[in-house]
Length: 93
Image (tube, rainbow, N blue to C red):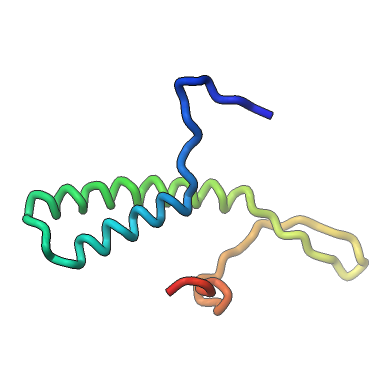
């Protein structure tokens, strides 16, 4: 088990970062902010989007799918995400 130095905290969960991004979008969609504040929110969103994308790409590299071959042996292959598959959007509104 690895430990972080006391001065470092673990990175936020990706779910929390996505929720923060969704919160920024909702706040921008209200149109209640002044231009300066809206621009600041937009810049935060762009940075957070890039950070989430990098983390999701790293997760994608770690996901392996176990499949059975015709002879019954197990093999590993990279997970291929299909965003058009109905299960890809389950639980999301």
